Length: 150
Image (cartoon, rainbow, N blue to C red):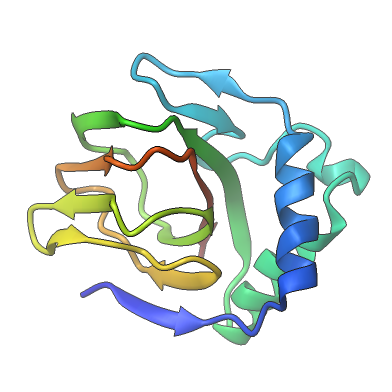
């Protein structure tokens, strides 16, 4: 079951995290999704301290859960677009932290049906090993930090 947890991120910190995301090196996949970092990896420059606010956010979250960060992706999905139904490999516990979203953005999977992940809150663990898709029916870009912890 997917749960939603408060993050206690303030408006100023969220703005700095959004600015860091804009500086990341994104690659477009076969759908319209753009990713900085890949599953089980980290965005380019992560280990050189280029994204201190984002790194602190995800490391604090993992530590609070008694786990270690094993991968970070930042995903951008353009307005009025969709990631088709697919499955992702892996066994890590995966959490989403939306930094730019709308109530017209939905996650769907075989167990949880349609679900909106609210901004600046942790949602997970998401069952990415099941068939799932993401739909952005809003006029805004959707940006999520996606964190794998073990």
